Image 1 (cartoon, rainbow, N blue to C red):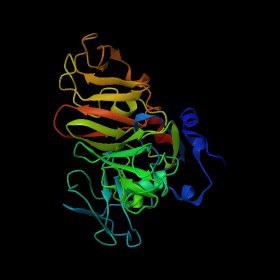
Image 2: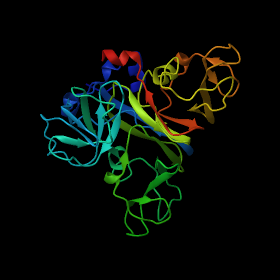
Image 3: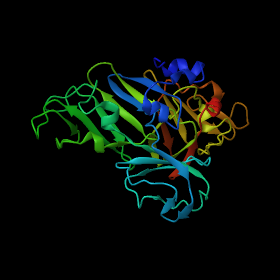
Image 4: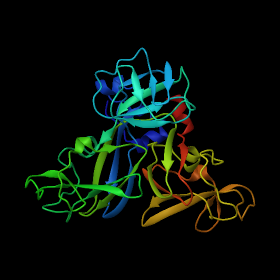
Length: 338
C-alpha cells in the first residue's frame, strides 16, 4: 500500500498511513508514514514528528532511585541509544545510552512519578544519520567549509547549539564527511549524534529551498518536555491534527507560566509562519474579556486555541522568562482511537 502524506492523514484520522514493511507491522505505535519538511534559505524551525519504531515494551516490576526494572525483560541484545517512554499519563521520557542489566533500565529518580505495573516503551533515538543520511542526503553540502551548506543546529540544553553540516571536502580528512560547524573542521560520526524528538532543530538553509523526508511511527500519547530560562526550541511532536489547544490545553493544562493582564512573566509560544512568528500566551486576565484566555502576544486579542493549527509547524519556540520547568504536551483527542 502506498503511504499517504500526513497532511491528508489529518482529515482521515491517520488511518491511511499504514505501510507494508515488517518494521511497520511490528511497531507498537501506529500508524506510520512519512512527512516532508522544507528548508528555505535562512533559519528554519523544525522538529521530528515521526519516530523510530519501538523495540521493546513491558511492565515495571520494581523502582529504585536510579533505575526501573522489568523482571520479564531481556535488554541484552539492545545496543545504542534509546528513548524510554513511561506510559502512565505523565509523558515522562528520557534517553538511555546503556542498560544496567538485562532487566534494569537506568533512570533519573522516578520514585515519585511511576509505580509498579506502569508500562513503558523503548524506541531507538533518531540520529543525524537516520534522518539526513550518512552522506548528508538532500542537504546542501559545503566544499572545504560551511559556505553554501545547510547547517543543522541542535539545542545543547545550555542555551546554545551543537552545529553540523555535510562537507564534500572536509579540511581535516580531505574526503566527504559530516563536520562540526564550530570552525574546528572535526569529522563527526552522524550515527552518534542523537536527535531526541522533544527537541526542535534549527536548520540554517544556505543554498536554496530543499526538502527532506522523515519516516517513522506516530506517538499516540502525551510527552513531557523541559524548558530552561530563555529561548527553547521544541518539536510539536504530533504530525497531524495538532492545535494550540491539543498540545498545551484549552485552559493551559500543560501549566505554562501564565500572564496576568499582560505578557509579563508569561511563557510565550512562538509558531513559525512565513517571515516571522505568530505569538501566543495564556493570560489569567485577558484585558479584552477579563477572564482567563489564550491571548495574542502582539495585540492582546483573545484567541480560540482550537483554531490555531500546528500542522505546518513541526518546530516551535517557547520563550520562558522564568525558572527552568517541566511541562506536558498533549496529542489530538482522536489519537486515542488509533
